[in-house]
Amino acid sequence: MRIRTALLTVATVAAGTVALAAAPASAAICRDVHTVPWQVGSQVFGHAELVCVDPNDPRDGQPMPVKLQQEGFPGFWQTVATGTGDVAYLCRGVGPHNFRDAALPAKVVPLACS
View 1 (cartoon, rainbow, N blue to C red):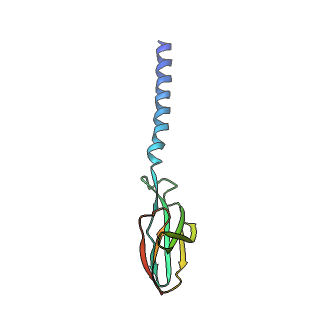
View 2 (cartoon, helix red, strand yellow):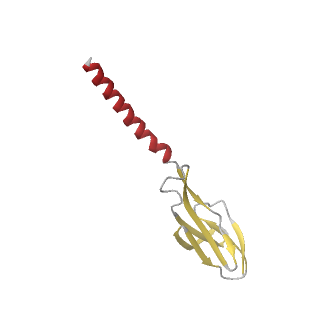
View 3 (cartoon, rainbow, N blue to C red):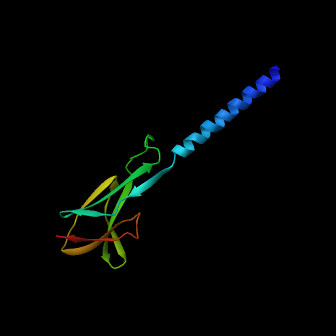
């Protein structure tokens, strides 16, 4: 009887350990989310943060690296601002310029510098 109880206790503890190890995996579902560039006045902004399925995950909302790029010549992208979380670039020149976040290369946004 003691052996059976001891085995049951070990099995329960082992199952509990597996369950505890599996639980954080579901909480670990987070994504690096970037916005497309936007303009306010003569400044162009970019933003990136970690968004987690579990809003109580301490990493939720953590600032992530951002690399704002401007198209100089067709197909040539120049990095104009880098940072973590939020970046801003004082738009130079006149007329529309194409901007993108390097993490979203297909999301090109034409913005009018003034």
